[in-house]
Image 1: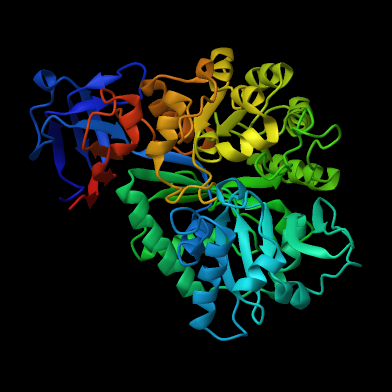
Image 2: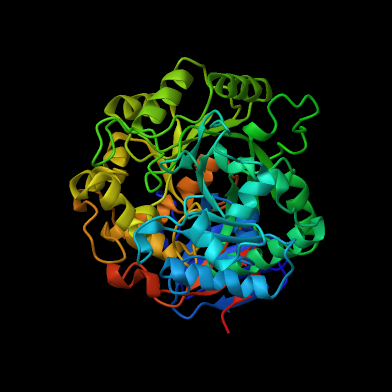
Length: 535
């Protein structure tokens, strides 16, 4: 279908995410832009094409406001240390062994996704576990949260990490009773080995992005926020080249400030900040703490079983202050990874004293994850219009770690979605893919199911008073995601917006909440062009 025709879509159950016109059964599109949405009996008479959507449920395309697409595209080619492929440390060693048999000793073996709560041994792998799989080539397995890396003895040797290596600022090298590194590198310590690891070629990265774009299309994801790379490459260059080769999603990009602070040559151009283009730079990202599942989020209360372990504050004052200065000068967004309550309070209190520095209605500060916001942080956030991006999938798939680290009652109080919404917080849903322990981490449907049921994948109650209805969940995954990310003209089906929409196999507004993750995307449209059709 040509996107330049004036097309009407009829016989549809349209949920628009537009509160002023929430339901419709027909829609008109011209040159990729929606011109009218409403009742079929009132639709415009002047059109060149009519498409019958056969009574199917139609939603705006999903907006994943927090993910790491380039990382996810890369991980898809590596060992997945998750069920059903890996259920124990022995399984992990076997997978490493298989890879080693296919490559030389000078090649790294990489994997992602391990979650000790899902392993039979109920503990993290260490260097010796990985050595069982391979001892003559370096091995690196990233934990599901992305904040902890486990490496084997060969990798420690290559990076020169010994019992005499000090912990880096904002990081920790786990050590045994003799002071020897165990191979577990937490937060900033995980970066000690990256200079010794191989980089993909530019063309390999582009090809992987194109593959990921196809996957996202099949999942109904039409817009995304790239929340930063772990290296100093420029994601804007990757995406613009991928677009030339057919990448379809709209993207807002955040630069990881730790990689660029102090680099006088780093600059984001006025052209990159232009939100009218498919790919635009949104601002900077800083890391305030770690993860609950890795016991590195900087919490208000100690982790279960301790009296003094509150997690780790990762971000130095210098990183935070220089990031704020850059964002004020360039009138762009600041994003902070802030899971624990102490981290949330720290950045909210600091940004609260500033006047809004973004030019449009985009929040000048957005917080990522937001596990345990204080009442004070919520009130200041509402007053200043900060944005929160949270991930229902965390409780859903990482429940073992949350129960171990926080206990069942405290777990129920985390991610208080209903409380934040009732207070008036600008809140959105996202996946943080691949930084969560789910086999297909970018899939929106388990994430939505988790928000509507507030139950984990195994049925564990995650706090019924904080669940939301399905309509609210969809709005948080569409309209709100666009607002938090500063993505223009997406997230709602209304005149003047891009015709980014999806057609579903089942009516997600009518199925049982327990069946939400069984719903499939049948068709995906971006700017009026059908870019995906399910078999």
